[in-house]
Length: 181
Image 1 (cartoon, rainbow, N blue to C red):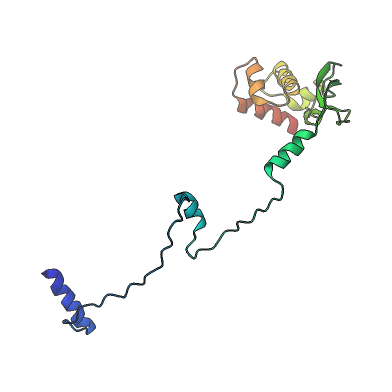
Image 2: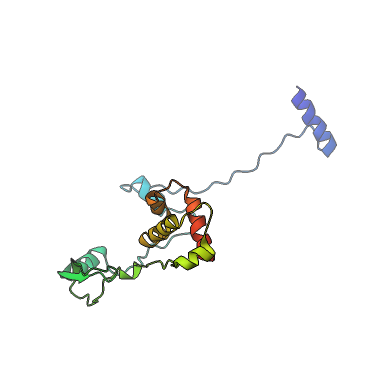
């Protein structure tokens, strides 16, 4: 009863007549399209849009996948087992790999990725004048620079091979401090 009293109070405030019941809005009857006999429900749902935007059903590719597959299969590509030398290596190791017959490049394709880091070097006099450190001996500094050259500044590897158990941060700090001076 409290709900109807509150509704009547609202009707009083809005100036509406209490006695008139609300008139329901007339229902619009939408024409229903029935699924044709023999068509699956999924296909009908894809094709019937009910006024929504229609997607194009015209194919955009003129060749069928079967034709392109046959076309690709008709072209035969020959392969050849060829020897090569990797220019990144210092020895003249002769390796071999499979290459397409129409590939005429003489150089090894991955040689461009063989980058060597140039690590600075120093003399004994330079070390004594500029690079001495209270916690580092010359032999340890030489070992650090040798490992940096051999392993291209790959710090986890250098840390693993370094004889003294120091954190990577200290090895980096010593190396870059020596390079700055």
